[in-house]
Image: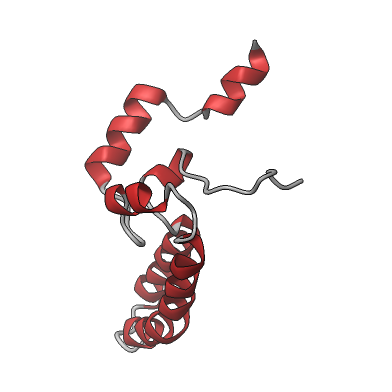
Length: 106
């Protein structure tokens, strides 16, 4: 079930962003805010992001910093939002499938 020894996952979407789950959740909340057509929703969600999501992300960063490959991964990725040109380039070059899917086929 778990990798032994446990290690950082630095491939796939994690090669562009250290917290893709939070990025997806933030995009969903932005969509809800836009869909509601209410200006109060975005500041309300922003407050939740700042006081709940951000401390969780920073605690996760502190925990993951014990791995040797952490610093290189930290230097080339962003905390939440992926760098769009790099993401689009990887999708174009590598396609939507991951390397693990290709290994299973051979």
